[in-house]
Amino acid sequence: MFVRSFLGKCCFRMNVPSHNFHSSSQCFEIQKLTRLRVVDNSEIGKQAMAEGKPPRCIHVYNKTGVGRIGDKVLVAIKGEKKKGILVGLKQNQKTKVPKFDSNNIVLIDDNGSPLGTRIHVPIPTILRTILKEKTQAKGADYTKLLGIASRFV
Image (cartoon, rainbow, N blue to C red; front, side, top):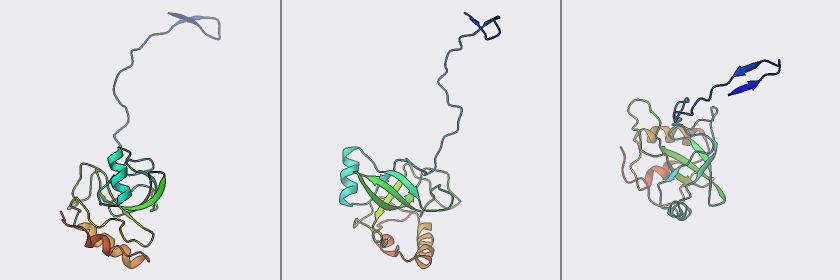
């Protein structure tokens, strides 16, 4: 196929077939618009997961904007804004922190107490030290979240 260029000369344009591969690396980090899985038994979380509309991250409350384990995030769930704590992530973790199959979140209210009464999945033991540091530094109390966890990994 010949195409006339802006100089008036004819040039040959090749038809290259599109390939089904991605040139960018996979993004296993929590950032804006990441889908999360609610792992507690809060009413709004159960309804959203049953309808197949998982919450999406709106904002990560740290300096980098990339969520790590134990970070607080703002999520959009069923048309409402709720806060949550990340308790399990797909991304590669530091040593002694397990890697999960899904991005798990526990919904909390403004003062740090969880909306549900149980956490259905095991949470990492390193989360105890992370949340206790954040409890002392900030006004929110995350010890209740550790109290409702049934299993630790």
